[in-house]
Amino acid sequence: MIGRNDHLLKADDSAMLQRAMERFLAAGGAVNELPSGLSNPNPIAFIQPRIASAKARKSRAKPPEEKKPRRLSLSDLARQERDTKIAEMAKTMTAPEIGAELGLSRGTVVDIGRRRGFTFVPTPAIDDGEDAQYIERIQAMKGLGVTKTQCARKLDISLTKLDRLLAVGKIDYPTAGPGRPR
Image 1 (spheres, helix red, strand yellow):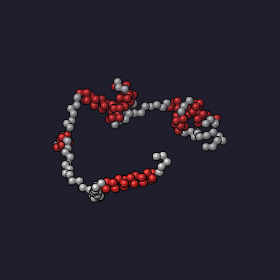
Image 2 (cartoon, rainbow, N blue to C red; image 1 turned 90 degrees about the vertical axis):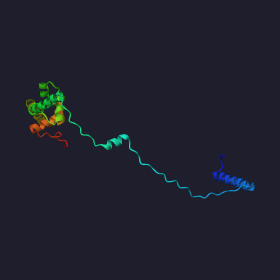
Image 3 (cartoon, rainbow, N blue to C red; image 1 turned 90 degrees about the horizontal axis):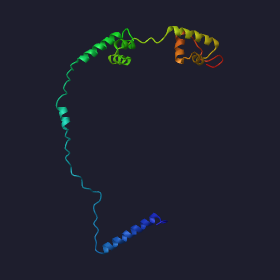
Image 4 (cartoon, rainbow, N blue to C red; image 1 turned 45 degrees about the horizontal axis):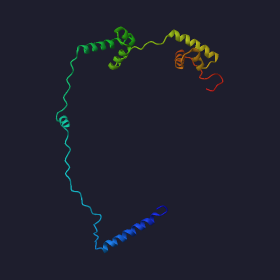
């Protein structure tokens, strides 16, 4: 088969088929031709509608019943009272102060505030005396021609804190050293 072309194989096959048909007809056989292109149509089938499950029928049968308000237990009443007390204290105190006074963690107090929608007095994290010392040092370093990054490193503070101190002290610090492009 190797080296033979396919068209020669097909020609051999059709010649062999032709000889077989001639022998069949010579032996008295008859060829019946069927009509082509016509097919029997499928009978029309009656499709039944889908039947809903029992659960679906029950849910459609009656409207959803209204939930009765839950009776508050003593612990629920105590919780509501505690939450209103925390809301009142939040107007004048920080979350850690409220937690220390009521014996709750700061996270619990903050979570109650988040759920109930009230905020606390912010924690005063800025020391004005310390800021004044930093501002004096920053002005001195600016006079020496030290860059902002070098100033922050020498003072051992972050650039964010340096920017905050520059804004508080109203200091116009150059973004680059002398002779450098800005």
